[in-house]
Image 1: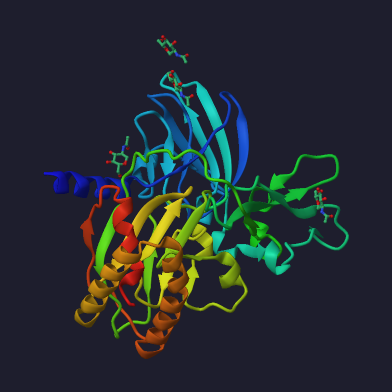
Image 2 (image 1 turned 90 degrees about the vertical axis):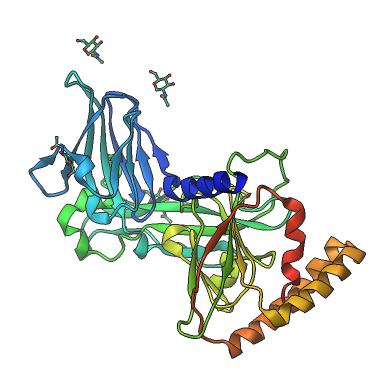
Length: 369
Ligand SMILES: *[C@@H]1O[C@H](CO)[C@@H](O)[C@H](O)[C@H]1NC(C)=O
Ligand SMILES: *[C@@H]1O[C@H](CO)[C@@H](O)[C@H](O)[C@H]1NC(C)=O
Ligand SMILES: *[C@@H]1O[C@H](CO)[C@@H](O)[C@H](O)[C@H]1NC(C)=O
Ligand SMILES: *[C@@H]1O[C@H](CO)[C@@H](O)[C@H](O)[C@H]1NC(C)=O
């Protein structure tokens, strides 16, 4: 029974996902720069809301947004857009049943695949301001959002902030680049959105019990047919703090952007929602410091014995610090394995929900001792 309930929960978690809420005061017109490829929710708090969409450069309003595959009008009236494309920029108007306009959004979905990523800790500099053309007084610049929360607590972590491309004329308010230039935006190269990362260290707040019990995928396996495997962290997004760990060791932007660590690849355009892996380990993903999903590798027969021995040993020692010290050498061993088993593939994913079993987690790094 419980298993069934947990299974349903895990499906619900995967299907519902998380849409970044975007709001605009009633009766207002709001220009918003957002990123493609990351789910958003345009808010219109009115249960009989009707949405109309006008695509950039088009003259025809679309009054039936339910017919667009990645768009849903929710019962509360909000508009959920999953994986928006840059071409879905334009006007989104919300009307109530009386034909009164409630909210108007003018959205520029900037191309997340063009994201310009820099890390402060590596001395990388963000893009510089630039004029639109040599003689023009129109300035292209990046307007930065606030820093997001730290992706870990109690230990060194990383935080990120988004920067959107804007254009400003003297004495006028800045306008998102895509809305300012319309069809002409393909002519310019500086029009990239940005992502900046820096190190952070915060104390852990009080433990808040999670409403969503985390999901565990068992028995993923990397085989020889393909070279890698993508793992997805269900409710992660570029708008939220995300942290991945392999055998309890954080996979950082710092190491990836330094160009020295090729043992994993965090997808930039989704802020690390997707992780490309090249070797077997236990992978965990945290969103806003909360464990969301855990991927367990398939246990191999020759490793089971080693695992059993290691478990006995760990139970005897019970030393958390000693174990994390060992993790480094485990990592190195895994890296060696990677060289031998260069090519990998997914055989199957079995769901199982470990209703939050913090205690059980202590065994995972022992797998490949
Ligand atoms: C939406 O409207 C309902 C009822 O009018 C109200 O109770 C609720 O607080 C509103 N929610 C937001 C986010 O404005
Ligand atoms: C809107 O589109 C959906 C899906 O294509 C269709 O089933 C529905 O009848 C349409 N509604 C209107 C009012 O045209
Ligand atoms: C819409 O019309 C109904 C009935 O005509 C009225 O009761 C309601 O207050 C109106 N709502 C708005 C937002 O104007
Ligand atoms: C770039 O332009 C923006 C907007 O005018 C301004 O706030 C910012 O200080 C400029 N940055 C630099 C490095 O000049």
